[in-house]
Each structure stands twice: as C-alpha cells, then as structure tokens.
Length: 325
Ligand code: PBG
View: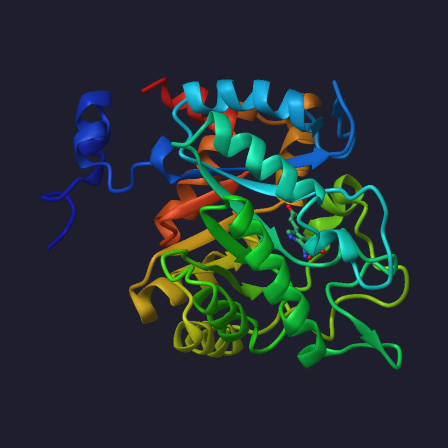
C-alpha cells in the first residue's frame, strides 16, 4: 500500500531536509582540472572552441595555478603543445620538451598539487595520430616503446601520476614495467581504459592541434555502441597494473561509468570532455540554460553514476560554486 500513506514529496519541501537525505555529494576533492601549456612567455591565449580555457606559457601557467590551488582543486591534468611536430613525436619524450619543462617548474613551486600528465602522441606527431605509423596504420607494438619513454620522462621531470590516453593494447603493462625498471614503482597509472571514438573531442582537437591528418581514430578508440567491450578493456588494464580506471567521455557514457564501478569496485574517473563543456557554455551564453545550475547537475550526475574523480574544464567554476575550502 503506497499512496496515500506514502508521499515522497514530504521529504522534498525543506532545503534542510533535502540536504540531509541527499545521496550524492559533489566535492572539490573530486575534481581534476585539465590545462594546456605552450612554448613561449607571457602567453594566456583564449581557446576559442572552449570558452574560459587558455593556452598558457609556463610562466603564466604558474600564476594560474596559484588560483587553482587557492580554490582547493587537488590536481591538474597537463597537455602540451610542442614547438615542432614530427613523424615520431620526438618532443613528447624529450627531457627538454614542453611538458617536462612545465612539470619541473610546477613542482618547484607547488609540491602539494597533484600533477598528472596525459601520455599520448597525437599532439606531437605531424600526422596527428596517437601512435607511430607503419604502412598507413598506427602500429600498436612499436608505439608501446614510445609511450613508455614518454611516461618515464614525465615522471623523471616530477609528474605524480601518468594517464595514458592513446588506446594501444598492452600500454599499461609496458608503461608499468618501464616505470618499475627505473625504480618508479610508487607512481600510479590512471588509464583511459574505456575511451570511445567520440565526436565530443572536437573542441579539444582545436585546442591541442591534434586532429588526425588522415583517417580517424576508430581503429584504436572504442565504438560508441559497445558496453561489454568496455568491461574487457578495464579488466585487461587492471591486470596490467592500472590504479584508476577512466571512462571517457562522461555524459553519453554514464551507463559505462556505472557498469565499470559496479563490476570492479576500483577508483573510477570520468572525463567530462571538451564537447560536453563547450555545448553547455554555448547554451548558457545564449541564455537557453542556467550555466552554473546545469553544470552542477551534469557533474552531480557523473558522480551519481559512480565516478570518484571527474576531469573537467569546469573545475574552477565548480570549485567556486562549491565554496572555497
Ligand atoms: C589525446 C586526448 C584527447 C583527449 C584527451 N586526450 C583527444 C583525442 O583522443 O582525440 C580529449 C579531451 C577532450 O575532448 O576534452 N589522445
């Protein structure tokens, strides 16, 4: 016997009561802020496809990080744009590369900020693919050596965690053993485990100048229609040594976040990607939705689906909305 004995609306009338029975709490602790670093000095260049996000030179990045840290955001994910791209993405694993220099500078000033680096080749290769090309195709096993070198060079520069986003098979095992061989056994790997071939990366590719110059990424990133395959990707990555499993994108993949969390009970990260960000920004700018409220609803839904960690370009805005700690 439900109604009229039970009335679910009783619990909804007062804000204080709503606060008490709320099931999901978004926190500043959950947020990772992805940022873009470029060569040069005194650069804070707006990224047109991603309002309120910028290309920073290292000096200006450090200034921005003061603000990020003061907001209580625990970690950042760094992407770099190299001076020069080539076929083998040489700057990606150069100890004098943009990320390596940026990480060293950050760590000198902000020891307590978690610095995570994205491990991939697409920003660094002239062809824009996430690996080494052989016979017109991304060569999986050859790429593993390069990814391992990138990871080691980032960690040697001071990165606290690495996040491989390339989607080659076997990269977690390769990176883990390369780090371990250098005595870097304490460095965790956040694997972009279930990363889909998604149109929602559009604004990022403009920001990172990483669009593939031929073909697309469907031979390595996952098909949007698949869910069971995401479980297999995660299972292999865990076996290979992943510490955190990431699902990407987030909003069209909330079911995947839920499945991965339920299945593995491991720390799960979700990447609220550029397209998800920019769509909301555009709608809010037009006055079609309330930007702040819609942002909080989106981020809460990602948490409710099972994510422990949310990578989002909204990190600063969300931290402001959640209140300074
Ligand atoms: C690199 C990488 C991409 C993103 C994160 N790392 C782009 C891609 O795979 O094409 C996308 C992030 C975003 O859209 O916010 N492989």
